[in-house]
Each structure stands twice: as C-alpha cells, then as structure tokens.
Figure 1: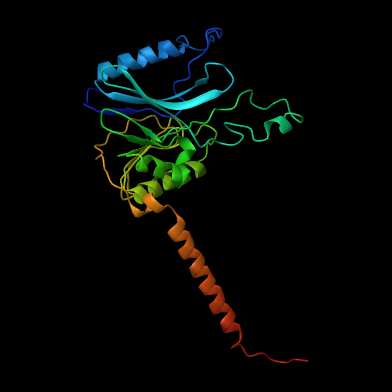
Figure 2: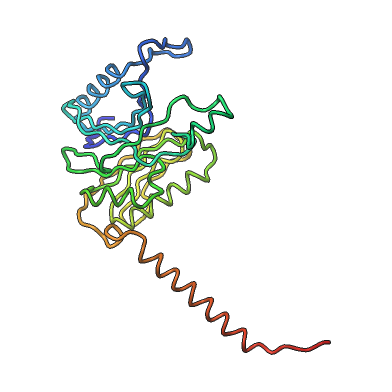
Length: 267
C-alpha cells in the first residue's frame, strides 16, 4: 500500500536470523537470512516506505551463551537506531528458574535462556522517546511506568502469542493494554503475528483489533502525548491501600452485625 505512514510496528520475534551453519530447509521457498542480511532487508524497506520501522528480533547473543529478545529502530533513511531488550522475561518460556537444579531431572530444558535487558523501557527515535513493553511486559504496570517516566509518548507492545491458540490469554492482554493506556494517559499499539493486534486510545477505548492470527494491517493516526499521571508517578499503592481499607471496614461491620443476631435455644 502506498499510504503515507510515519511508523511501522512489527511484532515480537518476527526477525529470527540464523547462524551461518544452519542450511535453509527444503520447505522454505526463500533462503533463511543471517543477521546482516535481515537488517539489510529492513533498511531497504524503511527507505522504500519512507517510514521508521520498529521490528522484533530474536537471536543468539554474540558469544552464543544466551538468546536475545529485543526491538530495534530503523529510521526512514535506513539508519539503524535505538534498541530495547526485553526486561521482564517469561519463566520456563524464556528462562528456566533453578536451572542447575532442574537439569538433574530433565534433559529437555531449553539450551539457552534469554538474557534480560537492563535499559529504560523506551526507544529513542526521530519522533522522540517511544515507550516499549514487549509481549507479557504489558501485564506489569511498572514496565509501562518505566517507559513514561523516561519520556515515552506512546506505548508499543510488540508481542507473539504463538504458545496460546485460544483467546483467553489474548483477551487478557488486550485488557492489560487498556489498563496501561488509562493509567499512563497514552495510546497503546499492539502488534502480533498470532493473538490480537490492536490500537488502544489513551482512554482505554479499543479503536481497532484483529482476530486471532488474522493477517491484517492496522492504520491509525496516533497522537504523541507528554506528562505523567498520578498512576505513573506513584504506581498501584494508593489503590492497594484503599482496597485494604475497604476490606478491613467491611469485615469490622460484618463482625459488629453478628452481635445483633438473635439465637434460638433448641436444646
């Protein structure tokens, strides 16, 4: 499509380059790409579309001791920009807790864990800082807050729900995206090859949403917003304390009511 766009968001783990020693399987109609070849294709596409591309990568680390799951910026001029490595990893999906212990009981554990990122949850870009929560990071309010506290003007959620073929987890993820949008007063853009892709307004309204694994391109004019909400600044503590106070008051009232109940002696 020739429609003018400023940003193209790709899902998590859709750029999956191979190491030189892995041959292309016969079932593939195109050769598998190494990291430099995949990056070259992205650069050519960004220049062709005159748009910045944020793509999701998954590949072995340079020393082959771990895997890396990250989002990468390629500018409209083809220049490689900022990178965000996923911080909150999925236990038993991206890393194995107590690996040394569990290896005594199973030889089917994944060979490498994903290496957790350490940087702020933003991608610096020609449009300013863009917040990023990769995949299930969207379920954790502190990841989105980290993005907004570092200047994020929108929240990107590249994801890949290939392990979940029903709609339960995908629906929960949309609900989480809506919460993050309302909490931080930001639009949320969710892109998935499986699961749901969606555009969520800063008021939590879902403007667009695909079906599970539906191949579609979502287009939306999205405002970049600034500032911090109370939820961004202080997190969930006020609501947690209020909830505890309400529960405590309810229990006290229930206890007071017990003393007013008449009993019958049937002995």
